[in-house]
Length: 560
Image (cartoon, rainbow, N blue to C red):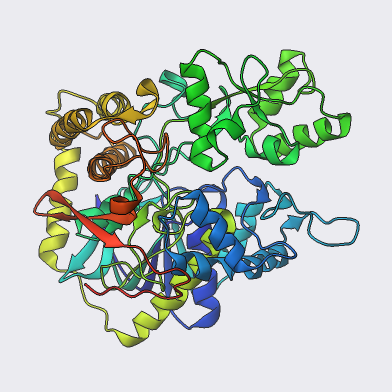
C-alpha cells in the first residue's frame, strides 16, 4: 500500500451532478485549488450516468418559484424546509440555461420555446448530459479530478472538518487529503433493502447501486445532525425492467388501473407516496396486477415513447419489441421498488442551513445527500451545488485550514491493514450484504411486508443490524476493490441503523408506504408536524425533534 498526502483548498467528494456543478461554480468565481474525488469516473457516474429524457424541476411559463415550493411541500405533507426549497427553485431556470450552453439539447416547440411536459418539466435529449458536465469540469485549470478514488472517512477535530481519507481502487494507494472546506455530494443510499430482482440481477434497481449512503455514513459517524430518514423513497416502476413510469403518466397521460380495468389512482390520492400505496393496496385486496393504461395510444405517441425509453431505460423498449406486442396493444404492469434514502426525491439527508452548511464546520452538502428539500431532481442538484460552492469558497477565505493529526492517519492505516491482512472471517462481504437486506426487508418495512412495519419489528431489525456491524469488523479483502466493498457494506449498515431509529421515532403514518407504521396508522398533525432529526452520540442515535420553519421563510441558520 502506497501512502500519498494531498493538500487542496476545496475538496468535493462525489463527481456526480451536484459535485461537478459545484466545481464549475467555485472555479469560475474564485481562485481556489479544487480537488474532486470520484470512486467511478465523472464521465459516467452518479444518477445521470445513463442519461435522462426530461428535466423534472423547471419553472415553466406562467409559473413562479413559489409554485414549485408549494407543490413539493404538498407532496411531502408539509415536512420540508421552505428556505431550502425556495433558494433552490429560484435557480432552476438559470442552471438549465447553463446546461444548454454546455451543449445539452433541450427540445423546443413550434414557437421556439422549451417543450414543456406538464407544469414543472421540460423535454431534453439527455443521453450525454453527464459527459457534457464532465467535459466542462475537465477543462478547468484549477480543478484536479481523481477518478477511481473512494473516500472512506472525514477528518474531523473539534467539530471542524480538516479533510478526508480515501483509497485508490486501482493503484493501491491510501490518500490523506487536507482541505480548507469540503462539499459532500455523494448521493443517497441504495442497496439497504432486498431489491425486486434477487440474485445475479439484484443491482437492476431504480437508484444507482453504487450510491451506498457513504456521505450520510461519514457524517453520522462524526456527529453531524441528519433529518427525515424516515421519509424513505419508493419508486413506482415498470415491472421487471424497473424503468420510469413518469414518462408514461405525463407523456401519454396513462392512468393507473387494476386488473379489472378500473382507474384507482384518484381513489388513494396523487402524491408520490399515495401512487405507490394505491398499487400496494389494490394488490393486497386481490385486484392486481396493476398497470399503466397504454392500450389505444396513437402511433405518434407510441413512437415517441419507444424513443424516450431508449434514451434512459433501453431494457423497457427491448421488452416491448421482444414481446411481439406494441405498447398500444398491451398495458404496462407496474410495481413498487425497495425503499431508498435519497434527499433529491424526499427530504432525507444532512440537516443544513440555507447556505447548505452542515452542523460540522467547513462541511457543506449538495444534491441527494442534503436533506429538507425534496423534488430537487437534476436541476435542483445543480442549484444546490452552486449554493454550496459559493458558501464553501466564503468559508475558505474566512477560516484557516488545519492539518490532519498523525494519530488519525495511523488509525485508518491500521484499519485497512486489518481488512487486508490475515483472513479470519467466517463470512464474505456479499453474504453479510444479503443478510442486511433480508433483515431490512423482513423487519424494517421492505417489499416482503408491503412496506409496513411495527415497533417490535424495528427493535428486531436494530438488534440484527448491530450484530452484522460487529461481524463486518472481521471481513477480509484480497485487494482494494474488495476493500471498497467492505467499506460500502459498513456504510450501508450505519445508514440502516439511522433509518430504523427514524422510523421508530415518528409515531404516525404521514406518508403511506414510505413510512407505513402499523402501530400508528393515522396522520397526527398535532404532535408530528415536526422534523425528526438525529445525531450519533456515544454509539447511540439520539432523536431530536425540531419545529417546522415558518411559511415563506427564506433563511435558516444553525443555532446549536
